[in-house]
Image 1 (cartoon, rainbow, N blue to C red):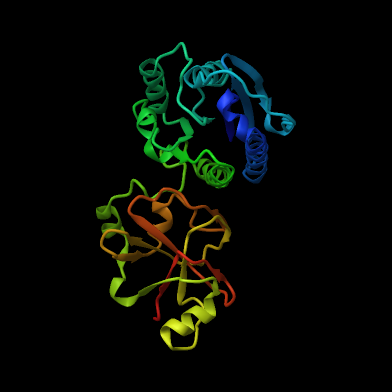
Image 2 (cartoon, one colour):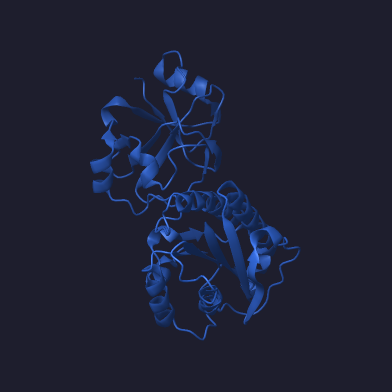
Length: 330
């Protein structure tokens, strides 16, 4: 398994208030790549470019095992995002085994703004990206500000490979968690022969109601959903609402924060925000692009018209106000 990874780092002036979080984000992603490489016995080669008005090659085709963590994150100037991606494509396309069928490429870019200083146009870059994606060996992943999705989709980037994030410390932290989880899933898929993906991030935002109805079971009549009005433990909440003793596994908490360990035996249910219909089944994990075995980390994201509920097997899980709980007695 040979994996090439290209990383584009935004060092523009607008990132100055987030530069410490950006430094940590890069270091954590490098660690995730290294851990995934060891787990799946993958030879991972990384190239990194930074952009702060101009493009700088920080790392050129280096083993993931030899990369050093960042200790500082200087920021200045404008955002040549498209040029940075084009530079990574140039570096990765030039490797000796670029045309080998057993080699895959992952290009990851993060920015807090729009491209505003590139020489290459979006149209030109989009043509290159589409051609590479058609080989089924290249995956392009972007993290961008909210509201900028359409500009990336216009380049041919699949919606499931675009993550919109809030330009705050908390928003960046959530974006990091989702990306770390996605890296783990990506390597697992590649190890099973899936050479590229159009659903890098766990995301129901682009799953249609028809897809869910066709592949999952409607359990709307069998469940109750209650709003949480104050911080409380799940046992007390369920017994107060149902008037019956709590049975482990009968309650599902709403995904509202990063969950570091969701075991494979836990059931996942989804609720349509528009009509309240609730669906469940093993295909929930497939729609979320999650592995069906092993413990996973699951982070909240933009899931469109769907709410996600995860089965609880504890008695003391803390429920947060503003979320909901699904109760499935049977």
